[in-house]
Image (cartoon, rainbow, N blue to C red; front, side, top):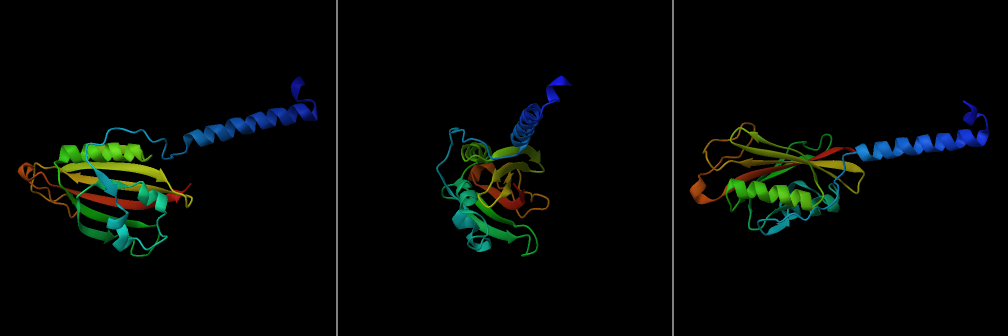
Length: 185
């Protein structure tokens, strides 16, 4: 090609090619995205206090915990240390939400979007719903939250979970939140 004969023209073409590759790579990264400010149907609070039994200071960046909201007046019913100090962070909490399953699912979908989590999937699982979302942390890692919301139409335990659904009349919904250190950004 005649355009690539001079050193300056090769440098210009190389720079443009590099910029196109960088922009393409950056647009494909799974980041949290922008806050969307969807209406949240319940009052919310940070989940940081509820994660404190399994989250020593500094283990999870403050920006990740601050971006994780749960319905106000939820009650923590348990916590889990899945990684046992071996490997990437993988810990969870169980809470009881003072609302039905449909309203609880709407809350978490809106809260995750509002706090710049990128929802990867939301699907029905046995006796409930599972939402998976990704957020980039200030520590250079992506953090994934898995939220399992028990349906309010059964009294069965979710497979692989300690959650038991309760009847619709009580308007209480068991929820499990599992936070994982996903990979470096």
